[in-house]
Image 1 (tube, rainbow over the protein chains, first blue to last red):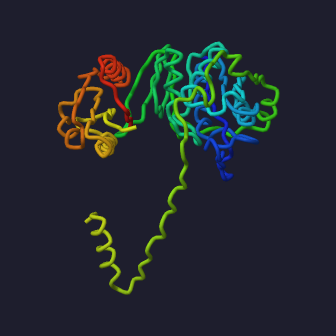
Image 2 (spheres, each protein chain N blue to C red):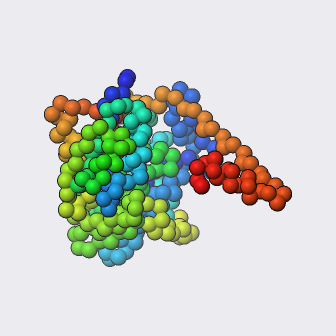
Length: 258
Length: 93
């Protein structure tokens, strides 16, 4: 059982993000960290391989400036090797180009029995890349997996829906996107962190993967404007003078809740 | 660009349109008076509800025998586009 996990490396959400003034794109300079939503996919993959008893978990990522800090975290968790696609020509790439790049990276690693991605990244939120990877690779896709099991060559998924969950089956190889909470990601051990520094992590360009066009030129969309989110208004404090209930009733009536 | 033709990916469960579907239709009708709902599965039980929330035309794949709607619905949309109809926007919940 060989699994490839698509991991995104993002600016630390604990620090205020900044947008490029001309392109409105998120600045991705400096150290990037493993997107927390991808830690679930890495953990899921490690558990599935452990259950299968053979195989390995590999990771692919696309990031600027040869950044590998977030990938090292995934390697420290237990992934075997990584392939980073880093190329200035990829700046401004849209979701479909990203999917083509990641699909080519997966192929370069020799393919996989299962490809895992998060349902969406914590900084871009397009939520479309996993399905686009499946289409590019010609594989079945199951989204919003909250529980994953493999029996022989059959993938069994509890798929989160608006009203509950669907029990879905498909054949392998396949692409799935997993929800946060599908498993509890492990913390990398000290030994894992040390071992991760020695694990293979290759860096290639879009040209190496023959993916073209890329970047702003290949994007089917552009960010035309960014507007500050409206600040939440302060709530109203009602001091109870014995008649506060009347004000609460009036408030709820005004909202047509009663 | 004027948006004249909006298509909405519509879903139902237990014979009822999902909340997300009705919200999308409501938004779509605020943008255009020409709103088409595409249903993966049998829409007969909630077609009226789709119309009340803004759908002016409904396409349904019919019963999918338990399969997820994505592939069948995408194929149906592709067929309709190839027949000459073309959306300005397709909305997904």
